[in-house]
Amino acid sequence: MKSSSVEEIINRIDKLHQIHLSLRGIVQYVGEHHNGKDKLNWGTKLPSNWIDIEFKFQNKITPETRTELNVIAEYLNQNFIIRLHSLLEYEGIKSKKIEIDSELEGFEMIEIVHFLRKQYAHRLGIFDSNDEDSVKLRTRLFEQFNINPNESQPTQFPLDKNRVIKPMVEGIKKYVRTFWKKYKN
Image 1 (cartoon, rainbow, N blue to C red):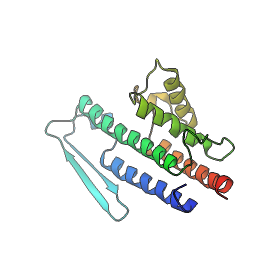
Image 2: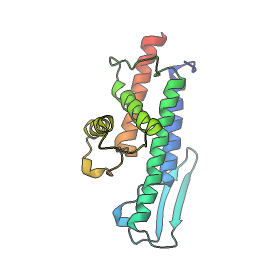
Image 3: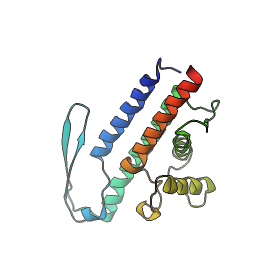
């Protein structure tokens, strides 16, 4: 492990999560109710400040525009998963040589991040209904986080920042704490 304490690892996870939340606050999900608008207003929080954001569009928002914006938001979610996985590898929590310990609290979240990273870094990054691993992972996400499949875009793995990513991060932190106790001490 690179960090000298479990709290140092937890702080790194929290910092990465905060950066993700700030970015996703800038590029948010754009729902159907935004069709026909030419302006979007929302905000995001940095650790030290609040930012009011206004997007002005030259043309009114269309379903195509919404899709394009939501693809960008999904890309940010994917980036977070890959970075989180990389941090876990860097810290020696999970790697090709270190198996996930299913006896530790939060192991399910480590597994999910592992499989999501595999989808994003080694495949197209979208749900593929013809790929057995892709189908299993998407189904697992729906079940694990109690998400109705109709609430997710057909080509996406559901990664809602509050319903999926936040509990995922909390589960990973539990795993890191129990991993540290079991293997570091």
